[in-house]
Image (cartoon, rainbow, N blue to C red; front, side, top):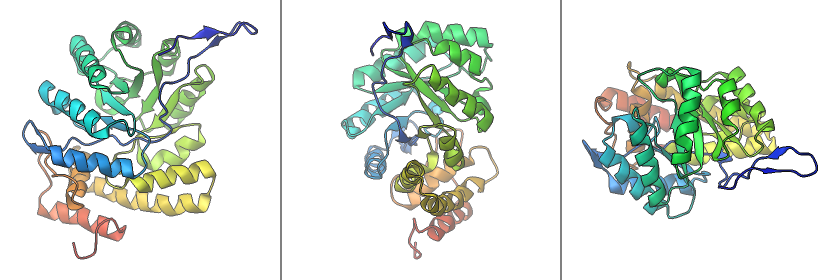
Length: 321
């Protein structure tokens, strides 16, 4: 990662160029499981081939959709090594490294770098809520120990702590931070986040909630980290391309499919339904099994049929299946 330089004419700090391009759709990959603490290698191969062939810009493993906090350290490492091997340089691989323990975060980032991953992703430490001063010092302290470009991940719904804009402004001085993924769903916050690109012109800002992709792009976002792209990557890629081209008719058509697909997230009564629905959909289209990590249970037959019906309506699943 290059260091920032100073423009001799203006005296202004010029940020380094980002080492990877994340403009487009970056699926937050599910972790296919064959059993408790057992990776489904064949399912992972099919899943990675599926999303890469669908045109995604990169893949993000061990995030929220990947159930990272529920996985053993051994399995996380296996997921990293296998994913990098299978991808084989076709697209960048981003690895979630967040842990409640500082040292485990560093250890995982070092392992990801050894395996050949392209970037690390770090959210706010969870369980014990950090104040913004503590959070700033934490990132400033840990970043030099992470031997990869780093994307910050704002996920206040689960970590209970925001990367506040002023905090990010301070952290923008760290050259190895290449951007932010925001899953808050707050478009006012997202707009202010995109304005930080005036300070760090190399930053890439991605939206999490997939239905907000058009609004996020209009505010200056660079793409989406959208869970639905596990299932139908080409649909999300088509949406992104239509947005870039300014083709409103194409955007409306593909967005209708995305919004219909989102009905699967309303199936079931627990907060885990988003992950269970995504894995159920992947199982139905023959990519990988639908087993989630403990403490979650997979959908029962009635819920699975509801997912199947949505997939049939949007043409992802054949009518006879």
